Image 1 (cartoon, rainbow, N blue to C red):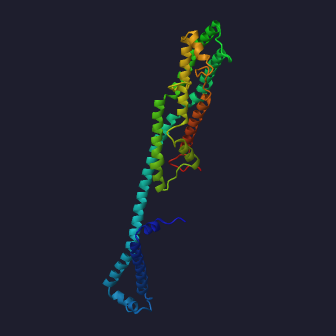
Image 2 (image 1 turned 135 degrees about the vertical axis):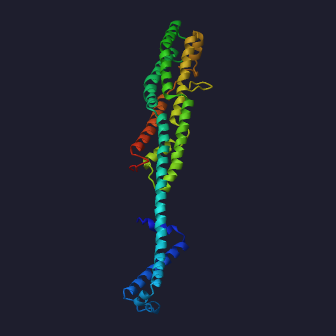
Image 3 (image 1 turned 90 degrees about the vertical axis):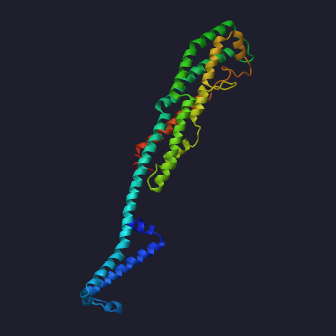
Length: 334
């Protein structure tokens, strides 16, 4: 049951103060009632302390009734005035604090949503869910299958010169397009250094929202966004690593050793095959346990691209839903 503000204010005083206020108020009420009854001639039969001063006696001693009126006003007015005044001051302070909290909430949420929206931009999501899976990987598979065809089945025998020349001509025809498609995705997604900076900004602005802003809103009983959105954001932003970084490793990362670990490395192998003579190319491709491109592929590439795109979509959708609900100015639907 919701209490009046003055009751909350009164209960906020110390025990001794509450007792003094209560005694003063009760004494003032008793004095007011007693003197009023005497003044109108009703009077009291007991005790004698009151009955000895009847209404006529009080009217003959004007100064004493004024003193009694002043005492009555003091006993009743002081506790009431202090409690009411403190209530008004407290209400004003609460209103000021709420205004400040809402202003800080809006500013912090704006910084976070801007950072997260930039990180999960539509350009980046399109590159992951479309360009990477419909352009880069099919081109990769086309080249990989051609190399597998040249390699043949065990036992591996060097193909004739004509087959080598045909393979090199094919690689030359595909290399530029393969490189362009890889670079397109790299440009749209961003390099690892750029993404780390953006992600650090997302995490730092989220920390302000989730720690400082949330604690202030809890103190002032202001609404937080709904549990589903809160859970999604908490899970998404609970670690410095994310699925987008997994994709950048397999797209543009370079490993110190074989096997092939990224699309950029696969492209470097294609350039090498074009430059090498037949003997060196055959030595790389015809090893039964080799780890060169054409022997080892990147089967995990589409899955990582898809996971990264879904991860960014989830982040962008959650922020868009919270913003559309009007938070932090209004209470979101649960």
